[in-house]
Image (tube, rainbow, N blue to C red):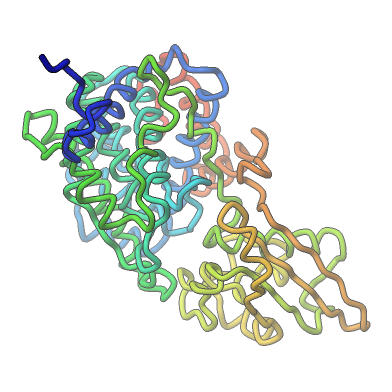
Length: 467
């Protein structure tokens, strides 16, 4: 008599579909076990900071003229969810879409160090709107936030990178967003979360990476479209719409991963089925308004300004060396502020001209061009060895007095290797929120987010966001 074996665990005859079902179920089960009150204080602090960061990035982004124009076209009707752009309620999907569109305008959204993507920024608009509509407890929303981040991160790791043509919005992070939304809609039911994971995988999106660097502002629809689709996958799962088990491993991973390894989906899940490590701790905060690949260069320029006193008036020429991936998306002749955020010449020139790299100045390219003409950018193959963990940049400046100064940065500030302190994180959020709410309003929003962790109603955050 043959002994019974659990398919996909020790049975050598198990089908790939059965193996896939085990992975989806494990992710869903681990997500279901994620309880805010049981999390380590450091994980809770990181989650609250990332949630605050995302709200701040959205709020500042809604001030951009293109986002105001988009909001006018959508004509959002009144509803239970917060549309940050107009400080009022909106219908669920309108709020998610418009808040999602504002995520990328300033290129300040969060990042994740082990895979290219922006999970926290995509999780926040969906979970906030759902919690507002359904009056969910704050700690349920935050549990879903951490659970979705952990699912997303493991999908990102398992992909082994993405093809060079694929943009990092709307792919692996979107599966985590669907898982998080299903966590909230299904009240933490593991089977519902697993179904949402496979459903989102079967609806895989693929956005053109080069649209962004080319300054095509349809790019801002990437995150907006992705988060709405992730919500649909979660709603379908909560309604009982079935997904094909194994879509993540059979379809999504092989099609959209550069070096997909299914076994990595389960890494960091303990024997009891819960997270044995939290990948959210490997998230990072973007401290410059530009593509993250350029942040090593931006940090090097900031050091030269602070330590060597470089300024537009005393610079003869600037040589910038960077790694291959940064060079691949560098825009030599940007024509608008989005393309400027993907241009080493523009970002270096703005930092030197104004004393720091901020959003101000990147939309005045005519003022930057005389200095941009003194900047050369090149690929240094020796720097490639530090990627992808590092985003290296070397900046050499020849001054008009004949001296030369140089700085190199491998790991930019804000990344896990050079983490931003709580003070720096909060300063970034306060600055961005202040652009929309003013100083006092920014402080009220930040206090309201902190209070969520202690169980304050989501309605209190909504009130702060609608002031």
